[in-house]
Length: 94
Image (tube, rainbow, N blue to C red):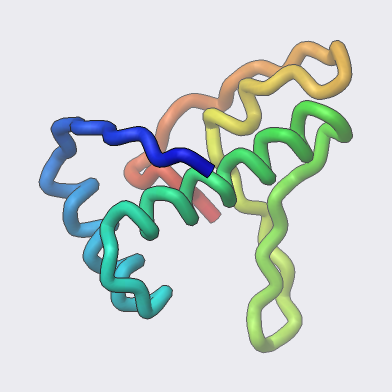
């Protein structure tokens, strides 16, 4: 696969997110962090678009929470119209 060089400006919050993910995922390259994040988001977006899938988080104690990602909710699954729920204090809300 050929590589494509991309240059972009990011916010301080984005830089902090990349640092945290780099440590949690045990990767050295910011490019690898971005690549992993894009791959994960594509998987979630395609599942939402094809099946109307929701994102659920199972805690260690067995509790299940629905994770709300406004950008994913805005995707119209299989022709069904879904309205965005807007933004909260964080991009990912549980």
